Image (cartoon, rainbow, N blue to C red; front, side, top):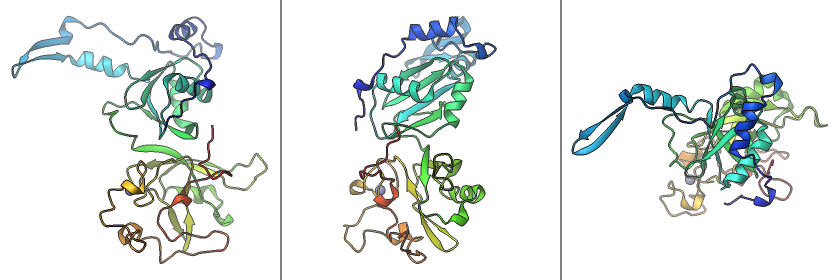
Length: 309
Ligand SMILES: [Zn+2]
């Protein structure tokens, strides 16, 4: 999917503008803060930093520990980002992340491969805030955010762990305790934050919670809470297989479908062992018998995935 929309573009700051702004006009309240020059991305190699020769009849070049350390050190305050399930161009993404992150100091966006980008931050506070304030969405798709790490490989289709918004429709009011919601959420993934929406006229209504989940594993679609089956809904996840419950492909090409699909065998016992016998169907919150389905995806009034931006 191509979500690029150049009509939404505002003129982004040029690199020169950003460096000039950072060098000459730091904000008053950040004057004591140590800033990184995001444009100074090189260092001088010393004579001892390079060793060359021939190994197994091919030329080799080895860099010293010092050079390798400096190269890795230059990635401090760098995030790896990707818009999940959507291709966004450089200028659009650059403009969007400035709008939603509102960094206090310039950031530098670097296009790498497979729709991944690096974002280098001038200041540590911005770098940490972006990680703690998620989940972020762009055009209704998650913007995955993770610190750069040395084993990062851009050939993987998407990161293994992301922060997503999760809803629990029909959750009994007796469970509306932060401690209980957090405990329930930790059965889905790792809870980051809980949003009660107490400030917009929907007081007491548990809205959603941000949960770190592993995209390589089947999504948790139901939880049995004291004998009652609770549906789990996910916001803004575009492609989920309703056969195996894993993000990133659709049922038609699911590798778990080794036998011809019929009405009777479409849901295997091994995948659905936790779903059927204890399901409690109520009038207000019917629980589907299948383990996974479109009901896991939060829809807006038009029946399409809700888009937050
Ligand atoms: Zn599948």
